Length: 485
Image (cartoon, rainbow, N blue to C red; front, side):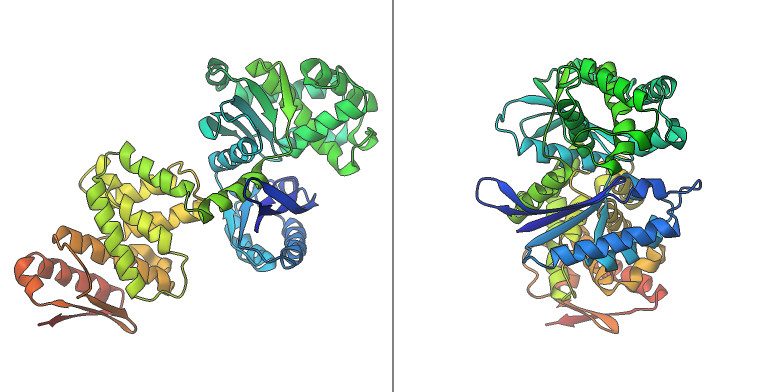
């Protein structure tokens, strides 16, 4: 049983799902419409009030999660926490409230998960499809075929800025609507030729905003009852007649959805006009279902992150044999250091695979180039925090350790970076075969033990280890090397 928590700009949402061997069945859902995106001040900071409301919501979600025996939980945060300048300061309090790590995911990763949720919910595996998700702070457009994504992009507009920026004090009139639509079209016009050039069989709207618009059209007998431009124009005209967001009364619509509906409608009209979409189908699947399916795939060792790392290796023509050898050595040594948890286990392995990716830029300082590439690349399946950790491991594979700064306060990170540094040294010294004869411990000091014959058969090993001892001494750690017969 898995749980997915989505910290969106409009609402915090939760799904608890069970995989029955064929599909994931949602057995519990929760929604809290806190409108976090509206809690950003003019300086891009979450206000104290917004943070308080958010942590109270997360504590309620923690109580819901506590009622189930869960195999895995993933909490993802989207646009508002991507752009909030004080997100890093807010995260520790938020994580304490819900009891799980919170991953701030990129817009492209959000799009990937949205598409995965949609694709796994549809029966036609060969269908080419356009998927649109209008969120509170961003809008994602994805084109894919079956489970494969062909194009994904995140656009920095959503229902919150469109509603707050154009319908001032809640006032709705034709001029405001036209301005909101024209503004939204500006976000999509450059990308429109790319999406028009691709042929898709069907277009789907995956967000709660799309479903609310569809329900408003259907329940209120507007247009032809489907998501076409004619029906959207009919809904727009009805909203203009209400005159203000507070006066909106539509069958089947909750009052808290009114601001979302107005801003979302402007974006939906803009997308359909720019991309020449004739009709769109709302679908009850998206980000949370994508997170649940991603957890299920990870549990069955079909981890999208592994695929991303392998694809990155190939794209930048890294030596896969050297990469694999380094990753294996690092993983073996890390296990020998007995870390307190498994937070770095997979990240260390992938960092070992990617440690020479920076050579595609330059052989000089390749660890610095690789660190920058990994931190800033679009690596499907990874969140920003994990990419930052991998970047730091790759940066720390050689050279001085002072550059790692506060990361060295985490004992398991120290174990991970030590394992990777020694793996790189052993790989450069061409040490092959089993590492059963290597002893490695870290307490108040580092203790490395290996056969004395290695110094004869691998003449550069002593040179590299002398430098390594000096680097650790600079950060206050003694490094002792012992030899066995």
